[in-house]
Length: 165
Image 1 (cartoon, helix red, strand yellow):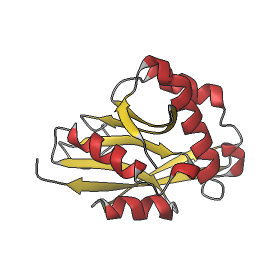
Image 2: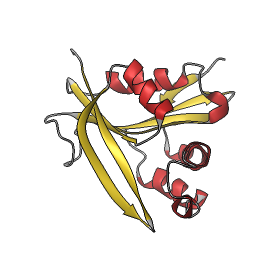
Image 3: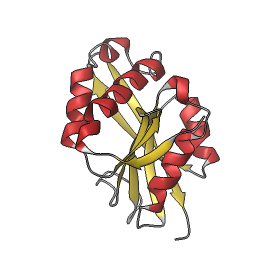
Image 4: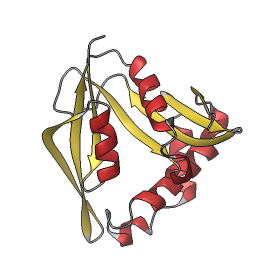
């Protein structure tokens, strides 16, 4: 499958929001409380994309956005490694997974990050994502974040990659 990777533009907000929304519905049933997942709306994901257009790469197949990665040159305050950069989100539509798109997005984002250490957070139980990140060299740090949502909780585990730059 042929695809291209490029920096996101303001015009990509709907496509990014659609990927974000759809990927959640495809990936997280059984990993998140269903009541919480039922509150996810396309409009909200498009608004997130509009409000955070920077530091994002999109993957396109036949002109359609099928995935994206967002990254932070400086990790947020809750990361356990300092200094570190952070992968904030990476989502690929299910029908476009296993074609190298996720690897290409992550590799391109890593090239843009200034620190040798890069962290990300992965939802507990998301074995497909965990295996992907481990294949790319990320390892668990032992840090976890628990977020209360409706009548349940989301547990995310920090993973880190240390590389030479």
